[in-house]
Image (cartoon, rainbow, N blue to C red; front, side):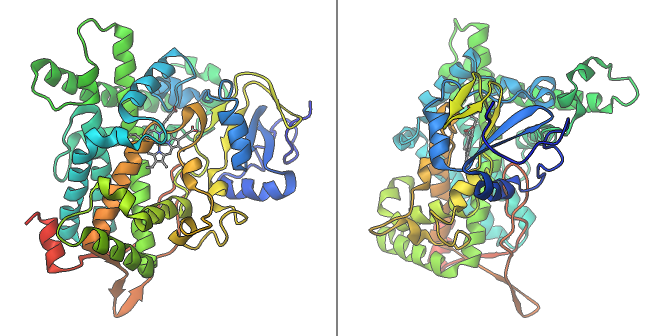
Length: 479
Ligand code: HEM
């Protein structure tokens, strides 16, 4: 067979030894120069196809979505921990289609931002509360800043999914959900657990010497079950008593529901927190880092807000169309730090040929999102933060064509993400100045540096977030 080209396989181990383990996206982009935009290689007999262009991603994931929409089977995280039951790692089956339909009905598809209208008020309230917390904290303590951003992001999804209101400071439900996600992160690294490679190990009893991983898996499994069951049971009870806030759960519960329908609902709603919290946090922190590093961009956006909104109220989601510079700025945040650098891997369910190359059934197909955002042919000077790219007579390629993925696995939270990120960024710009901190008489410039995980976070950095004026302070406090 004539597979898509790529680095030469080594006997037995395939490319395990020369496959990069950190920031793989940069290596894959470099391989594009050697092998083209559709490359492939094997790891322990598993064929992996990496797509390095929007054209190839559309051709396979969108135009042939019927056979490119499955997920790889990851035994540890998927089966032992249970995450294959939620949307992100669900196989392409009936349960998957039911969960997607349900979420589309509430959150809309690509281009249906108006589906967020029923949620505008609560999204804006959560964003406004973040302003109050930030006014108290001033942003210089990264851990607290991260915490506030994180609670705000969690608040959107828990409120919409379950009608749950995240409390001030530490919130028990948020903490429990986060602990479950730690298990997910640890177990989702491909090949981190031998059982993914040698499935027969699952039959080893957990008391057996050397089977500590199995006990750990049991703890993570129980956390997974708590994160799916506890908030659901809470929302259900409130709905039955007629006391709760309206939510996706309350709107879908009905008396003659089958157990299968209830399972679809519970797992679909549980998928929102995992998909929506870490990603949103990474975007907002990238935004704050960019504003710290590019004060002139910040000033331009503030001028736009001042002239369109004036200083007497906070900007709201329905002001979006009147604020093209702020919108371009947010697009540039997505482009500058690609949040999910390799997307989430797909798996093919039929043999296929593409441009004369054979892609066997069961291949893992990965879009190099990082390269799509950073390709210097499409976005010259990719490291520079320039919202102007997306404005004027000849704007550069709109990132909204692909920034939430493609095909039947496209991010179901994309409208919520757009609305909540717009509300947060526009409100922050309206009332705060984000500045470099001065330490021992020296201005400290943060690094342009990001972690290496599946979701790309800025490394901890310092900034000072101060109200722009007394009037801004009064706006924050709702006076
Ligand atoms: C903040 C920015 C966000 C970005 C950049 C982002 C990006 C992505 C990407 C690239 C995918 C994979 C698409 C694919 O497999 O081809 C995805 C999937 C997903 N996202 Fe998002 N997302 C964001 C926010 C959210 C939010 C707010 C939610 C929930 C409310 C969410 C829930 C999900 C879920 C459940 C999936 C899995 C879909 C599936 O497997 O069918 N995401 N997202």
